[in-house]
Image (tube, rainbow, N blue to C red; front, side, top):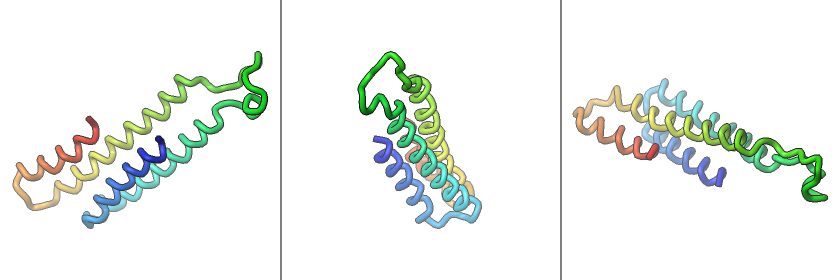
Length: 117
């Protein structure tokens, strides 16, 4: 699931890059791609290695060495939501400099904002 969500986030960020925004927004998009990549790698490794290798081979024991599941999910989901907010802010920054009517500007921002729902 993490890989699918990360791919969707990267696709939306690459869509913003394809529009060729100003340099500052372009750097923010590249930064967002790096953040998404780091979040993906960290999340996949955390989920893959949440228990010690002895549990993999022998099953549960009295010395259960798995990490706190609740804390793990809070950390992964917090970074997930933070990246979604960042992806919504990228088009908002980009639309500040575009010469379109206020209604069209808000329409574009709201359409990207639907991602949060």
